[in-house]
Length: 323
Image 1 (cartoon, rainbow, N blue to C red):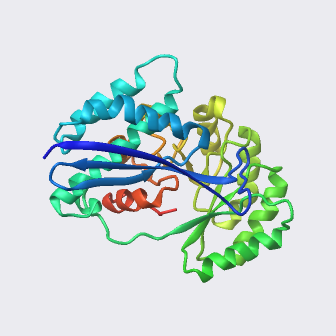
Image 2 (cartoon, one colour; image 1 turned 60 degrees about the vertical axis):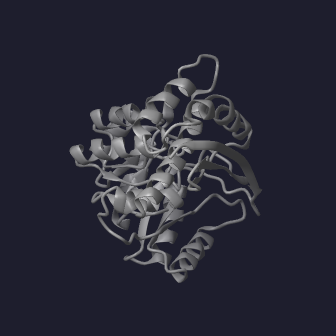
Image 3 (cartoon, one colour; image 1 turned 30 degrees about the horizontal axis):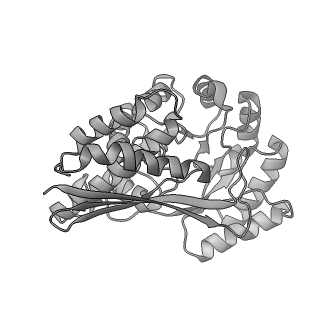
C-alpha cells in the first residue's frame, strides 16, 4: 500500500456567542480536516486543529508544500518513521511559529493512524491497548457570560445532568478567587455531590491566588484544579500550589512536545496530564506522554477533541474523561 494524495481543508464555524475563559475568547470553532488517500482505496481521515483561524491556512500550506511531498509513494503504516521525518521537516525550520508547524504534523499523524486502524480492522482504542470500552463524558462549561449570575451557572449544570453527562470542567480564573468561589458553589449545588466537577483557570492566577481559591473550594469535592497558574513560570508555581492544597492539579494542554510534559513531571507539578493531540505532535507523541505518565503514577486526560481523545483515553488504564 502506498500514499497517493494528501488533502488538508481548513474549516471555521461562527458560534452563537463568545465562550470566554479567564484569558481567552472563542467566538468561533476552527478545524482542519485531513484525508490521506492510498492506492488500495483506504482513506485516513481525521479532524484536528482546535485553534486560531489565522493559523489554519498556514497549517494547510505546511501540509501541502512540505509534509505531503515527503509521504507521497510511501507505506502509510510506517508511522514512527514518518513522524520523525515530518517532524524534522516541519519544525526544524527557522522563522516560523513552531506551534503552527507542530499542529500540521499532528493532522497528518492522526490521519496515518486512522489508516492503520482500517488496515488492522480494529477500532484504534483496541489497537492501542483496549483498557475499556466506555468513558464518562464531561462538558466544558462555566464560560464567562456578562449577563450571568451564579444561579445561571447552576442552571447550566442542571442542563448537563439532564443530558446524561457525568460532570463538567468549570471555567474559573477570570475573576477574583472570592467571586469564582461563588460561581463554583452554585455549580456544585446544582450538579449534586455525584456530579464530577473540575475547575479550570487556564493559567489565569498567580500561585497565591490559586492557593486561596483552592482552599475556599476544598469542601466542594473538586475532581481536579486545571492550569491554575500564569504561564511564565507555570511548572514551578504549580508545584508550589500542589504542595499547598488538597486536590489534584492538572496541566499539559499548553505543552507541544512530550519533553514539555516531562518538565511538568520532573517538577512534581501535576497529578493529571491533559496533553492535546492536535496542539502537540499528534497521536504518536500523545502515546509517548501516556507512557511517561504511567511510569510516574500520573493519570491521563485530554483537552477537548473528543473524536480522538475517546479512543486514546479508552486505550490506557490511567485514562479519565472524554470532554
